[in-house]
Length: 393
Image (cartoon, rainbow, N blue to C red; front, side, top):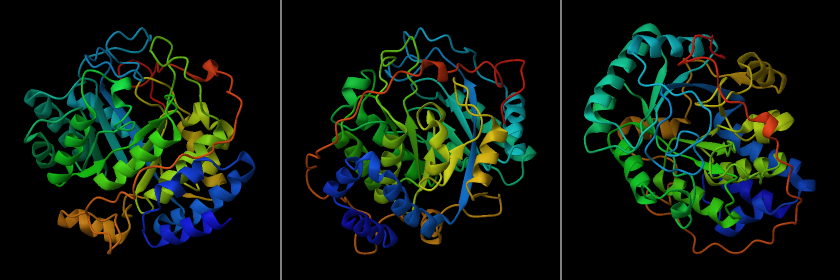
């Protein structure tokens, strides 16, 4: 397929595909999905070999969020029967993190519901970061606390944070349909604050919210322009009790095409399969490791994930290896750029400026049957942080 040959060549050169090419990946048929995976896998292996980075979530504060993000089980007005608790103490969070590190996680992601942290919250999280790093040598810590005010990213960095996550989630054109209590521009501003403070920026998307192919391509191109070091790809978990509970739009094949498109647009970036992989990729999860070089181990914020041991077995059976703490995740050019405070994803010719290639073209997508809702696969988290039960790690 000429398209795939072109995309592989561009990916190996870190050259941005056109929007038409990205749309064409999403429009390929299920019959061609293995060819798409094989092609994107060449780009993944060029920059990350056969390594898989493990990440572990610690939900510092669960539920009761004042924001109205339609996809979220912790949103304002959510009727989802999730765990609800206030801030964990630093030693509690450190203990939770240790379970993930013992399971092989290289990065611990500290997440708290809410619009954004107060200065007191930043101090609290700073103490938690210090506790985790004291007890777990070599571990990376990423904070995800919502919208940041001026100076807060710098304070998190000084406390020992390595990265900050804030996802764009969907395209700017459709963002207002998903969330009303803050804007797409607010999210972009927080990613830029993290990047400017010298933190490794982490920002991604959620697929399966009823968006078009054009929306998916737009948000991934926007991410490329923002230049995060890691891009988490979430697949919507349609929680009962949320506005998007009936959005069951994904098949395993479509998930693979989305991951492949992200890899082609962001060839040298840590692409992470995040929430929803068990629900939507199901038995095809191992194929996705040919596209993404990073996953979450065990459970998520409010939902249960695949057992940690099953994750490790899947990685080994698929012929991949868990990335150790002594290995630098990012390719050398990106790691050097991060250390120097610059950006590293664009080609030498492209620089760090905007990388748009005009307006998206309409793609002729194949007609597919709407998949049956698999509500049996959505399991609310009842173990780990905030409970008396052992975590899944």
